[in-house]
Structure formats: C-alpha cells, structure tokens
View 1: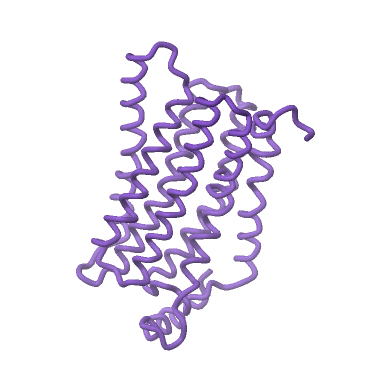
View 2: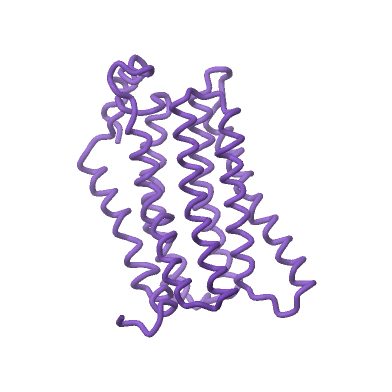
Length: 264
C-alpha cells in the first residue's frame, strides 16, 4: 500500500476528494446524455422534482469534498471557527437532501390534501436541524462528565442520532405519509439507504475509538462512497425503476411523461 496506514489513506486527498468525484461525475454525464424516463416514475407527480433535486445535489456532492478539504486548507481555516462553519453547512446539506426529497415526494404523492413542496421542504429543513442540536447538547453534557472527551465522540453521537431518525422515518413516518404503496416503498428505501451509511460510519468510528484499530479507517471508506458517490445514483435509479406499462400508475405516468418529456 503506498500509504503508511489506512488512516493516512483516508485523510489523503486521494480518498477524501478524488475518489469521491467518480460516481457523481458519471451520473452527471449520463444525465446529460439521456432524458429522465418520466414514464417509469414511481410517483408521476414528483418526477420533475426528483429529476431536478438529484441533479442539484450531484453538483453539490462534487463541490463538498473540495470545499471542506483543499479550500479550507488554502484559506488557512483549518479547525477554526470558519472551517467548522463550512463543514457544518455541508453536513447539513447532506442530510437535508435526504429529508427534503422524502418530504417533498410524500407531499406530492399525498392525494388527501393539497401540500406545497415549499412547505414540505421547510419541514425537512427544520427536522434536519434536530440531530445536530441534540448531538451538540449531548456532547457538551458528556464533556462535563468525562475529562478529555475525544472530539470524535461528537461524530459518533451525530451518526447514531441520524441513524435513529432514519429508522424512525422508515418504520413509522412513512406509514402515515398518505402515499401509495410504491411511493411508500421508495421512501423506505431512501431511509434504509441513509441508515446503512450512518450505521457503517458509526461502526467504523467505534472501531477506531474503542478498539484503536487502523482497519476502522478502511471501513470508513465504504460509507463515504455511499454518501458522496452513491446517494444521487440510488435516489434517482430507485425512483425510475417502477411504473411498468399497465401498472397501477400507468395512466398518471403516461400523462406525466407527455407533459415533462423535455425535462432532465
């Protein structure tokens, strides 16, 4: 291995920047060449939103590693307030992209009442703040009880907190979303995907902190790829895998396809 340890590899720009660009770039290239298959959307009413949302966050995913890595170093922000603030913005955006997509798709699929996308995104934005606030309070409380508390504990608390939120959304919130069966399955898939990479992150960090094993840094590479590279691909591909001709949403899908066929 050209690096002296997995930790050195993980912290290098090769892993934390370059390798995280491949899937988003491939996704954007594919989207530039192929129109979104609106006729196969699981939730026809949300097709245009999903197409635009995943496109926006594919670009955000490309910017994130550069902004929180090389840019922070170039500006001399380091671990100071400026660097921490920038890191928080991108962490928040990474979680908001999940909750925003889930809440907006659920709202657009809910036939029981008229819900605007703006209201759904506002609720998602508020909920996205919950885990960082609770994590900060818990970490501060632990800091009072445990001298020399490792700074990485905050991330473990955060990871476990969002894991719990994702599980709750997938198992409880989805059932009350008022959407059809296929849409609820999609929302559960998004929650499950998110829970998976947060569980892997938490596991890796516990291996590093508790067992002091370098292998934990190798394990951390996997959720990094799921979070940065795989999320937009999964969210998009899973949304457009349904809607077979003659299925329960065939008429709505056909109408959606006709009205939005030029969208990407």
